[in-house]
Length: 203
Image 1: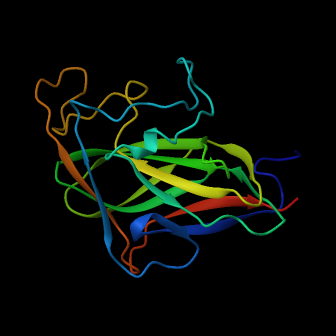
Image 2: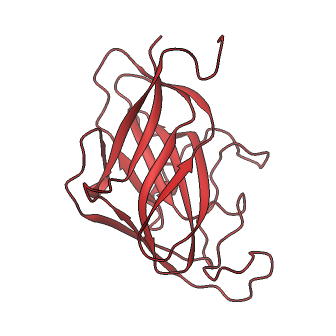
């Protein structure tokens, strides 16, 4: 490629809807809730690291955890594949019951046989005093979603031990002696829609 992102890349927005839908249309309201427990932290599954089982792995079992929320598109029907080339960014309207929270976002490629393969991810630690807009840049990627596949977005609050667990107390993770469960909320308000922006490249 002569440049990165490659020439011809344009942003494409996919919105997170209640009941786990991912769609370009703006959502009509509702929230998605989950609980993060630092004493049973959401584990790391693959991704860009030197740990065992790093790289693109199947997330299907991981996505059944109650502390992992998943939003999926309908199967892509166009014979023209979607190529994400650049840095995807998640924009979430997020609320936590604790003063500090982590927001971990992962994009996966769901194959027709049910495998949910890692594409890229990112994490952000935020001060969560009430609802606020959180921007999470993901790792750069170049990936093609074939016709018949689904685009999937995970939102959780950790990937342990790849990232240190958040005790929920604003203390440094290395010295925190007390942990608290956190009740997390993703908003689907049309005025503040949670979404991912994909840099789509047309060859």
